[in-house]
Length: 322
Image (cartoon, rainbow, N blue to C red):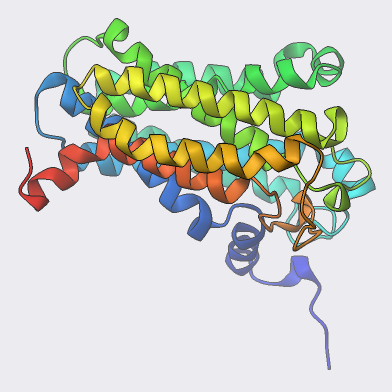
């Protein structure tokens, strides 16, 4: 029996497998749809106009492609570490090459440009700003060693791209000048939500840590990482309610987020007191499996927040609501 080397298999088949391992659409797609749809719906609510389905489609594609570009950039930034510490990943084991991923990135950027230009040419300057910040992130702001030595600042600086993506999605819905003061609470909520996701993604059980893989729980300890996640949760709750107040939805959102916040507090309190339960899985971040103890709750929180903030203009009419 002849065994075909990975790079000899058809490119599309290998890229599809790469997607399944490193950018699983079944996991990321729904959250990106909720995020982009919330931005479009929030803009519609602020402007008093119905949301445009075309704006939703364009926002979803533009944001999805941007997240793909960020994943591809990570493959280049982490290439040396992956070869040393994570040889089972797609690039070091030879499933795809960096050159092939560069071609995929170029194609994704061109498609993103075409989507935005076709949907709302007025949004092209924002796309240029998003790309500019993305390139700075890829270069690690030309301070790689300095930032890598400060993981908190590293993470906070990179998360700024999330409100920039939200602003691009908002621009695809809003035709006139952007009301930035009115949009600020929503953009802050997007940033706080990104912090929450980042901390949950990189806060692992001690048994799940791997040499050479920098996580917040490895750098600061599990209890400290959970404490910071809790601070981010409180910040996410506060910014979400302020953003909801701008569209007269604060009371309704509080009814949803209040019980969730209580559940989150009850969940992490034993861990903060030094009594974490035994993990069900010791799978690390390189496995592609959501092994972090905070990821499931975080995904639920993000879903509830964005549905409450931006999806009522979509689902309200279907349910007979205002």
